[in-house]
Length: 68
Image (cartoon, rainbow, N blue to C red; front, side, top):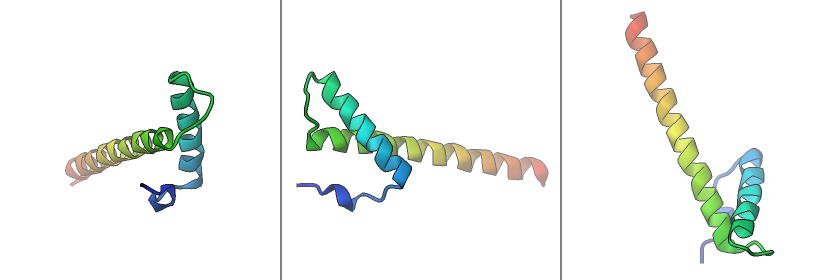
């Protein structure tokens, strides 16, 4: 079983994971949050972080190309 403490998350990301897990449970018609709800929320956060990092890298690369 996956352990939630194995993920490297900031305080803000933990807050977003808790809120996302709650949304996942409510969306599934449940009153209780399950482990899988947290995993889905964390996956969504990590995908967003990777997309943001990729955009930042592209913007940085493009900036360096135009300033040289």
